[in-house]
Length: 116
Image (spheres, rainbow, N blue to C red):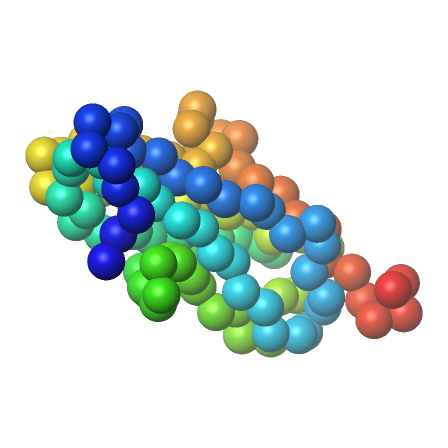
């Protein structure tokens, strides 16, 4: 079941993590309101400081929340860049961040256990 209110404009709600701990599992989550639209898929695109290319992952859905579990190998380097895309049946797409997400992604610092 998706969260929606009749007539509402589809929206991605997401609070980026402040930091990630190097080589530790984590999770990136979001909530998507669909309004009157039918959601087709939700994907997240990730890269760390060792790559200029993004890797694409399908987000999973559980109890009203879209999420991607990050395995320890995904949390390495100095930072993680990412953006989220949701596509609807009527070919409308939303992004977080909403403007030029591939050029201006979310950047989360990755810290070692020693810095905590």
